[in-house]
Image 1 (cartoon, rainbow, N blue to C red):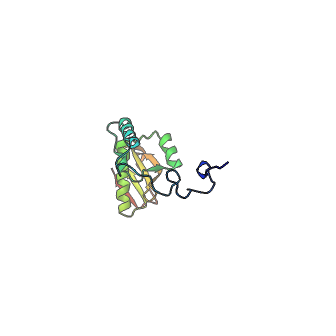
Image 2: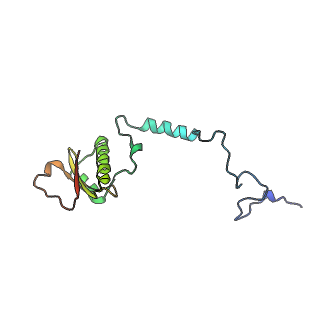
Image 3: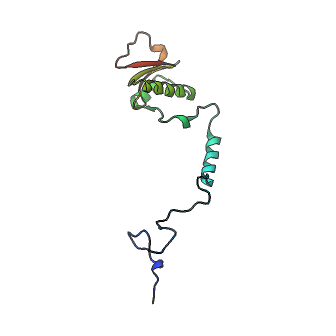
Length: 146
């Protein structure tokens, strides 16, 4: 009753000497190195179909903007909506602020005022632009008007 070694799986062994294929230490060979595969092509097609027209190209944004819980609550309470074009401008404003070494930055949009941490790219709080008159902003080290 001779049993061949290739019929068994050995735990904690990645390959059997002389074996090739799955578990082999040799990398898998591709017919065309660097050429997009079927999955890549299908994914690109789906993403291109789902992208709304007129929206900014988010692939260029290195670190997208995040919203703190507080900022999310303020946006909802104050019924402040930020469209994709405004969000793209806010991202650019934060890039500029970070390049100047600013940390906590006031970003004034046409509809809102946002306090943003430039280093963590997080919106800390938000206020409706129409309610700004008479307010004093503290603990900021710069402002960007868009």
